[in-house]
Image: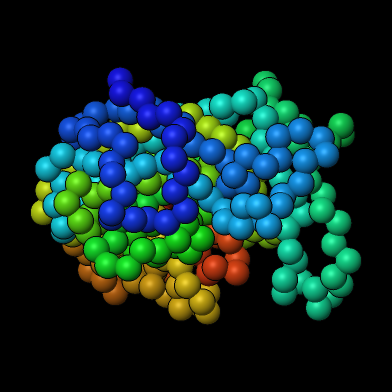
Length: 296
């Protein structure tokens, strides 16, 4: 199995960056990534200093997938997400819209949390189940050079909890080789990622990357053993919600034989929503496969 060490930290999805590695479809690789705080909070007393490192979400990559061409799709099976250092870090991020009610006297709140025995020890009294995920992963667009802060049709900073172990993420290919980047692993994250900071950790991620030739999708999709999901982002959030639902309906129609209006009706009753960072308007809508198996 090929491995990618940390190396250069990328803060944008650049098609001009030399690939770190080239792989064939179907290969399994192991990728090291830095935490979203660029490694600034490692021990008690450390602070997030944006005057020194103004950017967030450094990524490892790009990964060149042989034979990948525009209008293909990557199917990325996330085999494992492991903490590199046995710990994660967080701090009290800017409350932004909440300042209207909470005020602006915000403590830094930076602290390091050990990870052991399947839990994150957030304090002496509170432990949180270890539920690792990748906050930022994406292919490279054919134009522009998006930073690692927003999400989009390429993936990017989706911050969706279901980008996790055991699930498959589908991403569109826009440039030869796809040029995949990834990082921003979280040991856990609440729905909405309220302070814009999860339990951030440096990680070792194991991925199996398949290539679906001549399969065009309009944005990220996720498949778990039990659910299908489509991802959208943008503001206002109701617009992103509508787009995600529409893309899920079109997926059910194209690949599973559903009439679009029957799918629309069914989703009204059984759909669920997973929220990414609330200010970015990122979310995934999902349906259980038990319903998908009975097209109408």
